[in-house]
Length: 337
Image 1 (tube, rainbow, N blue to C red):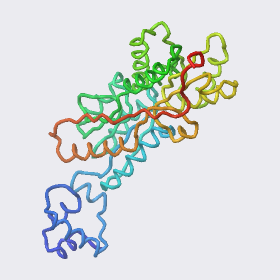
Image 2: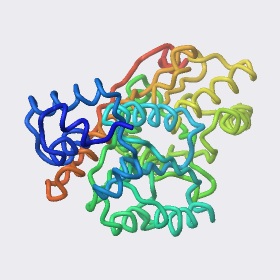
Image 3: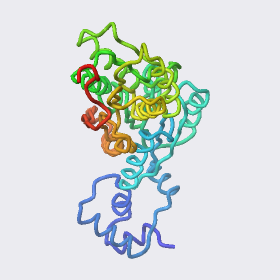
Image 4: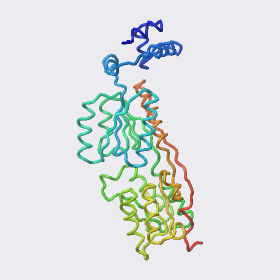
């Protein structure tokens, strides 16, 4: 069986040089790295992960912690993470558990302690639960996607600004009676980012002198549950809002479906705006605030790779871009027209 010594002999370098060239750990000139990689290909050499781990102290595995993988944002983000990690020659070990659950506590207490990773990427962990602080305490390279952390590199959007811009769009159209769909009734399940979006909605309403019209409507931010909540809200003709800022596109789509079921025209009688630019957003002609989760995943891997190479590098906090995408789910209120 071909070994690292065979590769080194064929490339005309020392065994340690061949090991550095193939593992990426330590400096090797580009010309030498190319020669070693060519020799490895010619000999069909593949490093055994266990042996490599014992020799270098690295596992080439990154632990990814996220609440779930069955929602659009997390699925897109996971796709971006996986593509970027594969390109870097790293494996992904996924841990998914709902915030506040017993499974989440066991995962942090045991799973991470029992496994060896070269780094950790934490997605939407609650700062108040001290989970990010505990992960930072492991001493492993750590990147947080979502909540800002003073002890980790971070990739995030400004959730406050996203919801404020969404609500200001409705206010600029002439709406005053604007409800916020997505004030999670179970505080343990209401993510840090979603709570910030509620703050952004409130800021926009207060700045427009509409603080007396602030109306958070509790619902979990899935299409079925937002549909049921919006149907109850919109069925009351006397107190029906003229517009809805939804915490995410899934909640917004639920609201549009509820309006259609009740015979309420969108946007002629009800304007709806979301946040995300979900894959279904264009199908529903949904006005939304676009974010780019795949790009966020790739950026998180870049930050982690930098941290893995230089533990003393300055922390980076990257603000991912957002933009308003105007479609046909928003218009001036009927009385203004």
